[in-house]
Structure formats: C-alpha cells, structure tokens
Length: 147
Ligand code: DQA
Image (cartoon, rainbow, N blue to C red; front, side, top):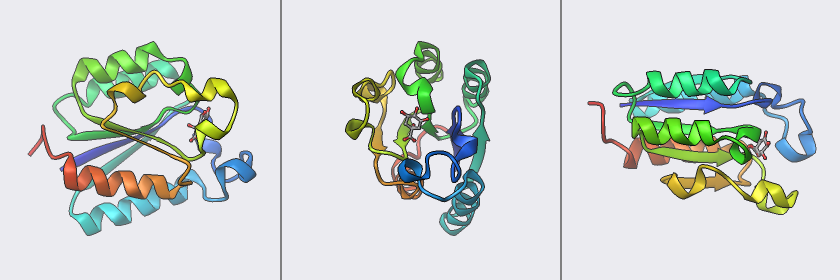
C-alpha cells in the first residue's frame, strides 16, 4: 500500500514560520516521523513538497494508478486552487486534506477550501499530529486502488 504525502507552498518553512500558529516541528521532522510510522504499518509513504501549483498538479497526475491515497496539505492553494481540485478528481485517488492550524479560528477567508467537499476526511488544528492521524487513517481505511 502506498500513500503520497503532498505539502504545498511555504510548508518547507514549517518550524520557523509563524511558530505560534504552526509549532516548532520542521517538515523534515514530519517526513521522518511519517516514514517511521509507515514502516510500522508496513506501508510506503512518498513525501513531496512544492511551492508551485503546476508541480503539485503534475505530481497528482503522475500518481494515477500508483498510489492508494493522497494526504495533502495544500497550504494557501487550499483557498485558491481549482487546478489542484480538478487534478485530484481527475485521477480519482481518494484524499485526506490536512491543515496544521485550525483554519476556522483564523481569517474568515481561510474557512473556504476548494477540496473539502471532495475529501474523504478533513483534519485541522491538530498541529503536526494531524499528519500522523491522516497516515493511520489512510493505512487502515483507504486501501482501494493499488495492491
Ligand atoms: C495551512 C493553512 C493555510 O490557510 C495556510 O495558507 C497554510 C498552511 C495549515 O497547515 O494550517 O499555508 O494549510
């Protein structure tokens, strides 16, 4: 079973970026933890981060038939990207949307997501533990496409 973990723009700055909102764990910490968790669950996790919308669209398209589930923190593209929505729907891979912060407790425009109505689950406000929760959920409940 394979999970693709996508982090969008500015998530490469996790740990140093507004730590009062996003905490002190780095993206490297998150990915390391995800790999440990994956080996314990006997699954594979591939991690990808990009600040570029088109690169994320390309990565999602390439995942077709290759991964069972996508876990995506789209960063600010959450609130803007029809292209990422269409890519996820186009490949038909079930996905979990995750946000480190509680987007509902922030600026009102962060409440809207172009992905949430199509997501299998939406996680927000759990800090980086949200990634752990998403991986466990995906590993146990999202075995669909790939053997
Ligand atoms: C975020 C929330 C978004 O609103 C923001 O643009 C981000 C990170 C989160 O993880 O809390 O970049 O997705």
